[in-house]
Amino acid sequence: MKSEKRKAYLFWILFTEAVGLLAGLLTRGAVEIYSSSIVKPPLSPPAVLFPIVWTLLYALMGVGAARIWLSPPSPGRSGSLRLYLLQLGFNFFWSIFFFHFRAFGFAFFWLAVLWLLILRMILSFWEQDRRAALLQLPYLLWVLFAAWLNLGVWKLN
Image (cartoon, rainbow, N blue to C red; front, side, top):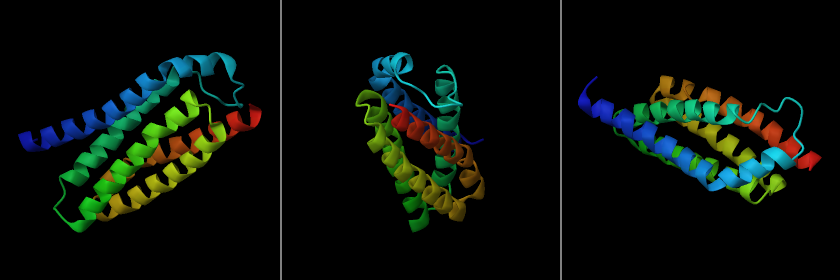
């Protein structure tokens, strides 16, 4: 792999992981309180699973973004990257709304918008690089599962 490609992959993966890490750091105390005091719906995974899954998902997201970045310059590429950054911003703020503010209802609707943004991003990626789009499917499915959990927490608390 050429140095330029390696740098692009490294940048996008580290950038995406950094966004997730910052959200995690900002909500760490609230997550601990959540874990001990909130009624969780059936099929809620153990808390230790979430950082593992999100680290893998952020890596896949970053690889996909790098693939789009490395595709030929075009308005489609620019639009895809804007969608990527927009959904990443929505992703970042969801954890703050959910864990820090415990605004479970608002967070559920925010997550629904995030899911739609991810779907739109995948469709946009598909036009640029099909592998980049396919790399986002685990993320889309995990956010759907997170929405189900969010809805359960909202209804039970």
